[in-house]
Amino acid sequence: MLRRIGRIFRDIGAASLLAIGAPSFVHAAEDTTITVFSAWRGGGQLFETGPDEATFVGALGGTVYVETDKGPIDSGQLTCPAIVKIDLTDRSQIGTGHCTIRSRDGDRIYGDVDCTGFFLIGCEGKFTLTSGTGRFAGITGGGPVIIRSDFGQSESTGGKAVQEASGIIYWRNLHYQIP
Figure 1 (cartoon, rainbow, N blue to C red):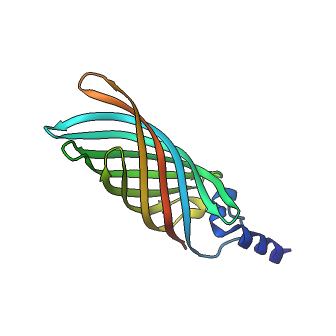
Figure 2 (figure 1 turned 135 degrees about the vertical axis):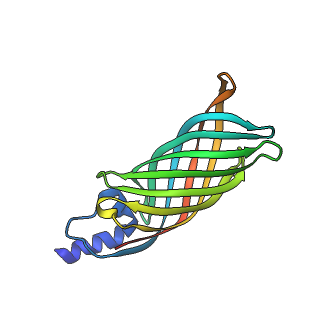
């Protein structure tokens, strides 16, 4: 019976453990590279912070999907407060964020994102896993990340603009280790 369960997990792929939860009898270390994405929605405020500079302060959130051989699996929820500094002359940007991914069973993964790119086009950089809870305790790793956005409505409110946005965050080769 345990061999059959082992084969089922192997067929589904290690990445899907985020979605279905690791059984309590699994205690082996994990070292895996996965593809993950989230279609997100978010918002915040855009502030003038210099003669040719603006700073976006806000958050994005959405459902996280892990790619498996059987297709994407809903694996939890993402929340990332973020700050993006924008050079208004060439539209370049530098962004940072601190993300929480809450799995369907409530365990959490924490990570930091740093990226550069161009406003309204996207931001590419590095995602670093910093810690986790429950079955993700001790998680380490990271990989490249791409964040694309489509800034939507903008409403001026006394020197700042309220922004609504949607987009995708994509981790093509997210490598992680769990002790």
